[in-house]
Length: 426
Image (cartoon, rainbow, N blue to C red; front, top):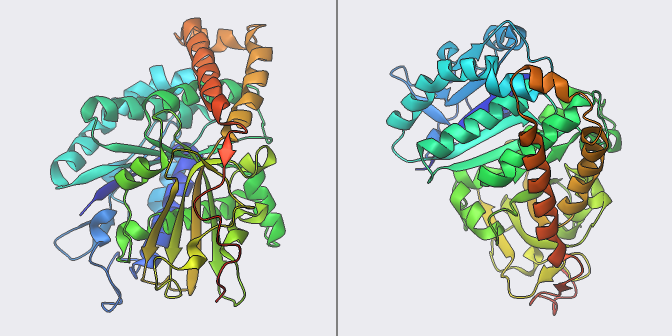
């Protein structure tokens, strides 16, 4: 049994983490009192995200942090999910949208207060596999405290998987400090994080518009949570091919620093669908496709439902015109979950390790250089005790990663599945 801790940081991270827990409750048939209401549903692996107490309640294994108290207060007052108040921490200062405050001053103080909760999770868990962390890269609380937590877990146990799910403000930047904050937390994610699933506001906005939904943060959070429910389905339910955090990292990361994934998912409740549709823009939750739509270092298809009964079915193969693979790498992986979603017959998820992340970072690099060369707003970080060398190191590290993606551009070859010109339809 693999066990995972959910961590939400800052306003964005708390809202996404809470929505994720709500959908986990729904998927496992838990009521508002965290009790199982459908004993027939397969719940053998429910302890992946929950701890069971003496009253047979399944309390989510989570931690929520914010430098402002308002969001934590709302979290504790909501009635849909029972959250242990001892796992929620806040202060009354705010971050001023500064990475330095979230990491070095008030954020470091708050981190010291919550370490006993993390240590308790480590002691109580028989097979802790890692953490899933939610935050916004542009916020001071999210980026700064996320950096502290990442560093803490690395020092605590190198064998645990750190899976970050950041929301990038790509194309929707409201404050110039968000560029600095994003580059600084990217520096930490490049060096010490195992898996990063990238979400951004541009792609989420496009999905909402394409599905006639209001473009607001509530709908963004629901879309992200639905995607993660699909990603973790093979952790929580049985199937032909089970998944896990370590298996995901092993299969999709050919080189340690190239661990930034593009998520997609598609709900299938109709006939005549094609699995290759998941590569279309309307199903992707980040905007890598704006740069290099078809070039992937590795990818994983996540299947959930009863129409995928044969693991080797041709329907699992992606045509050569829709996806490229790289010579020398076995880059096609699958997971399967036989327990259907309550509302949907079949779902297909996709995680792609795309070299489009190179151009994605270059857009931040250009904005960062324009600001940092003039030392714009750097004084605000220095005033809190941050050194300019950290900016320089973050820039160098980002440049190095961009160059590491370079050799993969236009070096693609077709996969061993090229002989399958058409897919089987259901």
